[in-house]
Image (cartoon, rainbow, N blue to C red; front, top):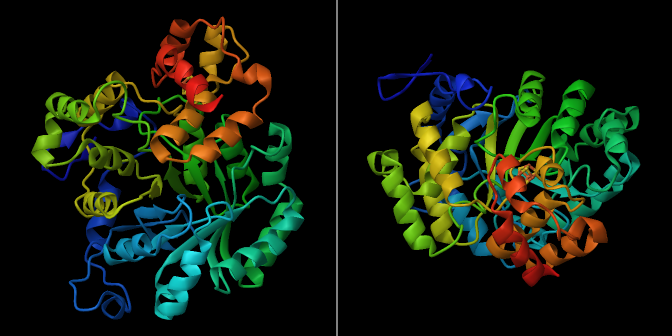
Length: 421
Ligand code: SF4
């Protein structure tokens, strides 16, 4: 049993959804961190009351990070977004070579040099071989106008290698040497991988065995089955002291068919906890994720100040969800037809008797429709081989029945063709 901060006890969610131990430690961490002040905060925030976001340990790195991480995957011109996120207490920021936001960081650091040391900066690039990490990191540092980042990720790990090569890479002597070299040079405090690969459970298991990576950013869902390979891999990484950052967790939820406003009202009716805690469905999703204490921080791409305010407020008000509340939130989410492939081994395609990459196709549609990443969505779609795009003849009802997220392929795949083909 785990202690619930409301005063009651709740059944450990190990028995219900997933194997991560939860709650008590997370609540303690949140409570402790919520009162922490940031050095130099007054200077950067003027006379406004300083806000803070609870922090959690990033694995066994010895570094605590804010539970909410501002993703910047929306291109250049995000000065206002960065500064507003900072004013809300967010101290973890995520960019990459691909996002075009590095220039905004550079400008911010030039105008407010004190900020650099107060935030945890994550960037990423695509080194095909470990030997490319140092020169690519040098380019990232120059683009951001800083001489170090806190965490460097090999981006989209697994997408640019066959799976066996990716697994060998993450455990290789060459990767260890490259990671040690950038840390020794003071250019990155930590090194890791980010992945949304369909076989990311195997990649995470290999990373846990390899003992090289400090942190992993991973596409995550709070509705993982206890026995899902990804759930077990997260356990292995957590046990190995790897810091875990979740990503791609809000887009594609509560946005199925129909008007979103009506849908959100319906969700509120179905999940009484939302009114009891005065949470929006999206805030509750974040609470569901943070109830998994293996997740140190959630990277959320926020494109306007309302999203930043609501998500920051959710972090400040976080208390772990009870198993019954997790279940009703999950049921409401699945009932409204999520669009994003959440996890797994591609059992949908197997059940449907097709070579089409059904999970990837729905993921790219989510990029297009919910992340606003239209060019990226089309590029990803174009990069798939023809047979991976051709879902005709597939048994889409069987695919839906097999999918843990119950994606409505019969509705989504024609949309994929319409928007991306
Ligand atoms: S079954 Fe669902 S979660 Fe698994 S790969 Fe297919 S779409 Fe993704």
